[in-house]
Amino acid sequence: MNTGSGSGSDSGDDSGSVYYANCSEARAAGAAPIHRGEPGYASHLDRDNDGVACDS
Image (cartoon, rainbow, N blue to C red; front, side, top):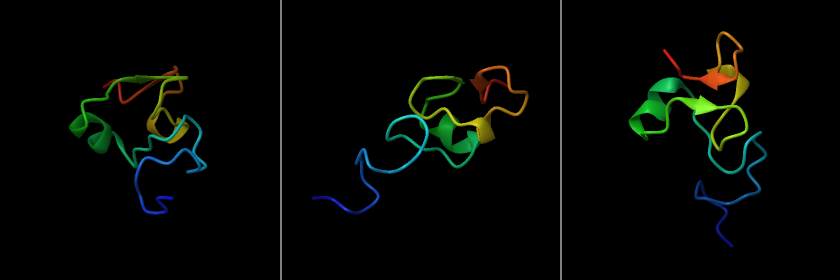
């Protein structure tokens, strides 16, 4: 199995197998804004805790 930084589902993050370290990464991937429950959402990206990460 792939144990590198690929697209495995055992990555341990909150929302599936997508992880963004910051909003710049999410925007570069074309994923922003990210709503709570969507792949890639994480509370550290949602500064105002309104359920939408990287929205501004």
